[in-house]
Image (cartoon, rainbow, N blue to C red; front, top):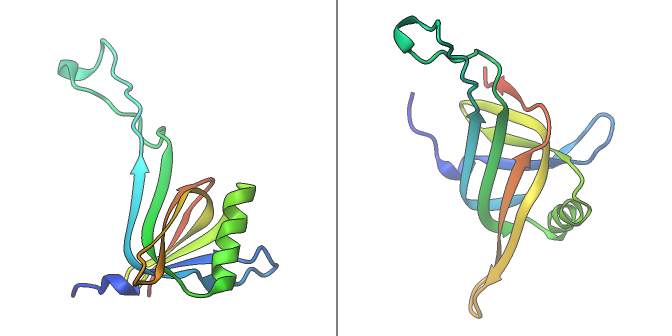
Length: 139
């Protein structure tokens, strides 16, 4: 598989409608998507040769997304601010071209604004999963 351009990864926020419509939040210049699955140790005195045994599917799964960049427009900035200040779980899509889409409820864990006197206003955001995150592979 050829490499993917990092700029093609998108973060989109849902409008809570039915059906839900997603809009791109921002032009992110740097982003990280981390998927985690905790493990549960099921080792006992009867474990063969004292090897650790993990209980499949028993751990807690989570997703964390972080990124930095420039908001696409005032409306996307306002949607993110509202979700942060109300601490409401909102539906997000993480689109990874050539791989698939992660979709689920996320809380905004952190939101930072910055800017230089001779440049654009920028932001950094961290999203933490707040429920089931589904993956749909790109056909």
